[in-house]
Length: 153
Image (cartoon, rainbow, N blue to C red; front, side, top):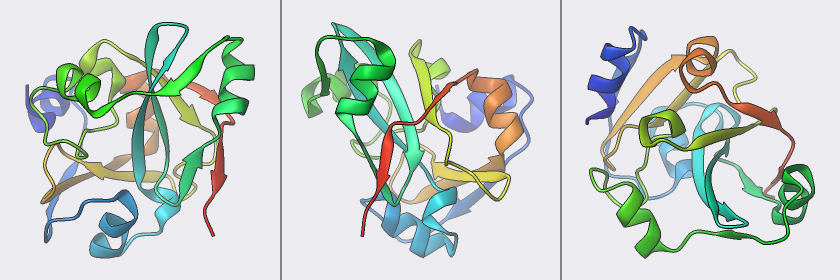
């Protein structure tokens, strides 16, 4: 299923933006002229054998130790590209949308995301993004809101 189909099916308002190909969330932020804190970057992690979609600002990284503590998990690590290709078969690698619910994954959202009340994210390809209201995003994904990231310098 395409991201826009998923959003339409769930009656979520959004805007589609096209841009030059970008291969990092931070580059997409620059292309879209939005702050990195408003770009939702999905990171797939595995905690004690279960996959989670962590969603954080583009300008941040996942602190695996913090996440391990908050999930009360023994082992937490980033998923491999092979695992990601299997879980997100309809997406270009590295352009996965941050909608865990679309892939039957629990969404873990860092509380620092979307300070301006909206998010921008990849729409499954390196040339397309969607912008939506943060409250609509939360309604759709029902994220567990945690603190698990740190800002890149």
